[in-house]
Image (cartoon, rainbow, N blue to C red; front, side):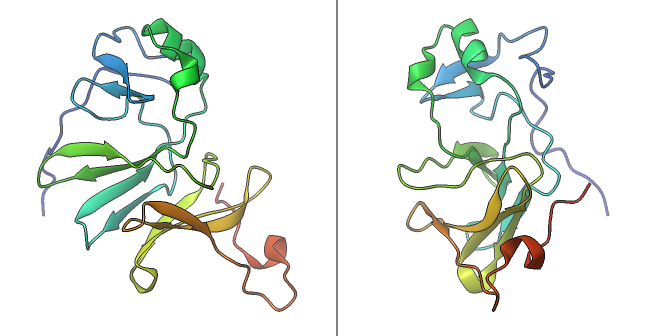
Amino acid sequence: MAWLLLYAPDNPRNYADLGRDASDVVFEGGVLVTHRGGPAIIAHTWSGVTYDPIRRQVLFMNTWPIKQDELIRGRGGDPKQRYAGPPLWSFSPESRTWSVHRVNAEAPRAPVGGMLEYVPELGGAIWHMNNWQMRSTWLYEPDKTRWQKLAVATKKNDFEQSAPSRSS
């Protein structure tokens, strides 16, 4: 049992900005990315990481509690061009490449502390949150590149009481 480094870290960042050396960050395709194609900021995610065994990818909901528009302007970009959908990324351990999964339809918010979990029976990953930021469960369907809000499956339709909340 051993850890193997698949992808060396990019320049150090924090929640407030792009760090002391943002020379490896560009604004491309509506998102801030490193020159190697990964997310410019790896946010604190709690349970926002899962593995899709069918596509052999790590899925990562990269929630950012920072002011992206300021950072985009700082890299010479136009905040009006920013992709405003949920920041779902994937990493392929085989090719060691990142991809952002953009959707142009209804999609969930990306609050800090959500739960992302691949569910084989559903053929995709669920994104769940039950607190003041978001009270719902969504399914990401990779073959259709879309999010679907799942219906509440309780007799009383009381999501707040029946669904688990985020862990502290």
